[in-house]
Amino acid sequence: MSIDRFILKKLDHCHEEHTRLNLVKLFKLRIQKAEKEENRNLRIG
Image (cartoon, rainbow, N blue to C red; front, side, top):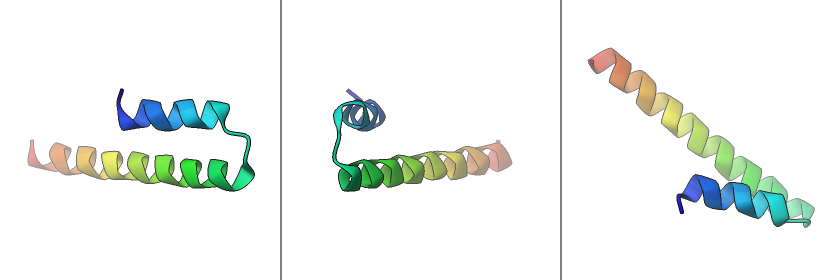
């Protein structure tokens, strides 16, 4: 299972607000990192 799927699965089942916020932050960081990598690859290619 990919880390993204793991985070989404945990978000789906998590009821503790603080943990949910941390999971959302982590997921946002992963999205931003992927966007930066994609933009870098577009400039190179």
